[in-house]
Length: 380
Ligand code: NAD
Ligand code: MG
Image (cartoon, rainbow, N blue to C red):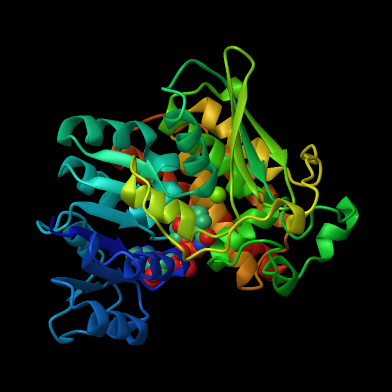
């Protein structure tokens, strides 16, 4: 059988490079046919030399560069490339939405790392998949865990999803110390090495809010049946409780190569020796704790936005993206991130539409709101 063609969107990022490492161990099964990046031309050039893909896109390309395509449209071109059967979307942020929609509408399997797509446009994503016959498979480790638990139980009625969270670097910090958090502190994630944006999202727990909304859309489970528990070792990737009270979990060392491989091979499992095996004795005790909502208000804000529906999740996501960028840039303090999100949700609460245009308007309004706050903070 010829290898399946894979378009890797965001190939130079943390998930993108991990995907190419996984594919390098399974060359008989998968072949990168399209690669896109935002601005890292040097790494993209190395990847092109190794993989010789049919399509290469660099969003922020200097004009007239070789045979590469430039501009934001290259994501959709790569996502609908005729040689791609699977689109691994590892772009960060709402910038990944159009390519998720385009790939599903073109009937592709989307291996989705770009959770923001689903948070912003959950209903549109489902509609695109229905219309085009595309299939959505999560890359996010928690959702991969849930999918694996469901697959092994024939999808019998789910009573509850319990999504695990590492708790981030400030899990045990007193709440009053969080005002003094530096960018360097926040980028020190205890268990995962990831891109900067999701690392900050993991420190504020905004990432878990995105994941609760993601789970709601992927598995059709109501919000009041989705819980979050802190699990500092990041070994149990999530739990599913079934109607009879039985609970399944999926375990593994914290490496994104496991869920990436499963998203590519689902429902099959491939033989793979690339990731350290889980050793229960060496790992030691597994702990579980309640979320400290007072210290990490972004989680409840995001879940409330998910429950509200309409454009609220798009507002939550955009405000968070903008606030995280400002934090990384020194323009906002750590505890101002959830404050800015809350303010944007209040300010933009009258934008109910859910067409793509409506969502883009809500996204832009939320970003404006946060930018005004940052400008005011700089002037103060
Ligand atoms: P990253 O910052 O390391 O990489 C992002 C990639 O997207 C890069 O290749 C970059 O060139 C590209 N990109 C960035 N902005 C773009 C834009 N506007 N248009 C087109 N391309 C753009 O991020 P990451 O950590 O790999 O995360 C990618 C996605 O995967 C995010 O949605 C994140 O939430 C999700 N995710 C990541 C991890 C992880 O372990 N890193 C785990 C679960 C989910
Ligand atoms: Mg995750």
